[in-house]
Length: 212
Image (tube, rainbow, N blue to C red; front, side):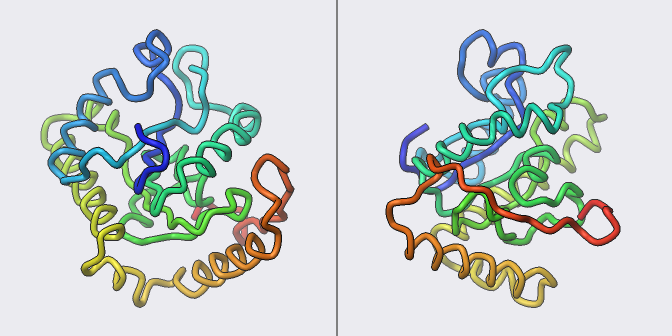
């Protein structure tokens, strides 16, 4: 995808097809994502990537250590792409980018990125297209419709319309906006500092240690 790009789609990790080609989302899930991008009218100003760049053994979920090791590379990509919105595809990407891993509870809202990503771009959480492949036809169509709806929301958030009102009344709105404002002011005050500095941020965990 292009650099810069308005929309950055972030998945979990490369699969077998992606490992062979070195390109993200070229397997069966990628074909579904391509169809959804067309149906949502996203156009060409979209870039896709993954939370980590290497395929975990047996295609398992990446460990916290693996995600942490690849953080600098994803961070530099976000910095280079300068997206207006980041779409997290699946629970792993959602947790890495926003700290929230329950997709059902967090879909349809523009959330603040965790501070270590140093981006004012909001995070939009949705299902990974691979989830469609592992469901029966009815459930798969429901997931497909949900992803399509979220991608359309991402398009609206970038191009205007009603997306600006999505956050109204959402319990995370004030918190998210304060994070974005603090974050933008910090970057403005330190123009020579970027992700290459690899500054460390302290991020409080959710109360009770429960997933958000």
